[in-house]
Length: 294
Image (cartoon, rainbow, N blue to C red; front, side, top):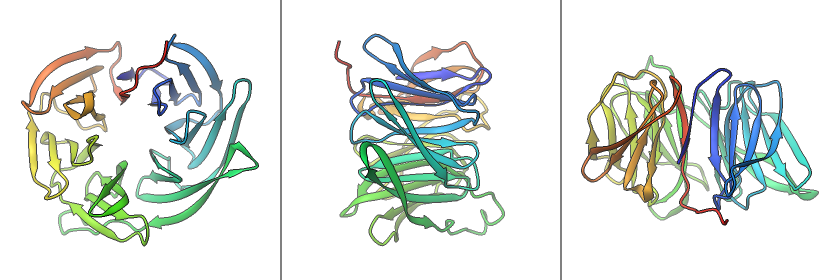
C-alpha cells in the first residue's frame, strides 16, 4: 500500500498498474508521474497547467492511464519506452473526481454527473477513442435527502445478481446504487443513513467499507444492506478522506486529516497499526496484491 500526504501543490491521485509493476501519481500541479516499483525509479513525467483530480490504469495491460482533470476534461496517457502520447476531450462540467475501468468501459463522475464510456483502439495500440455510452440520471431522493447536494464519492465495478458487469455508484448524501451495463437499469440500492466520505469494495465484491462522516467506519453486506462490522470513530472527520480494503479484504486502511493511516482488522474490528506521514491531510491511498519482479 502507498499513501501520500497533502503538501502544496499536493498529490491528488495514485494507482498501481494491473500487475503492480508501476505506480502512477498525479497532483494539483498538473504533473503525472509513473514510477517503476522494482527500483522505485521515475520512468515518465507528463506536465500540464491543469490540476489532476483522478487517475485510473486501463486494465488491458500496463501502458495506458485515464486521467481526470479539474476543468472537466478526461484524457488517456499512453506509455512507450521513449514516447508519451496524450489524447483528451471535455467530458464533464465539473472536476472529474472519480474514475473506474472495467474491460472496455470507463465510468467517470464529476459532482452529480455519472457517465460511462467505451474505449476503442485508434490507429495504433497506444491511442484510444472514448465513446459515450450513457449519462446516468441523478439518484432518487428521499424526504430527508431532497435538499442535500448530489455528490458522487466513489465508483466501483462488480458482478451481482447474474449480471457480469455492474456499476456501483456511491453518493455522499443519497446512498449507493447499482446499475447493470446492458440497459443501465438500477437493480439494487443501499440506504446508508449518514453521509458517506468514501467507500471501498471488497475483493470478492460482497461488502462495502464506508467512511461515514458522523458514525465512523461500517462494513455493509451488499446482498441485504446489513451492517457486518462497525469500527469506532477515533476522531471527528468532515473531509473526504479515503477508506480502502487491503490484505485481500482482511483489513481496512483509513485516511485522516492528521497525516496518518490507520489499519484495522475487519473480523475483530480492532486497530492494528498507524502509519505516520509528514503532512496534515492523507488524501489518497492504493493497494496491489502483486509483487513486482526484481
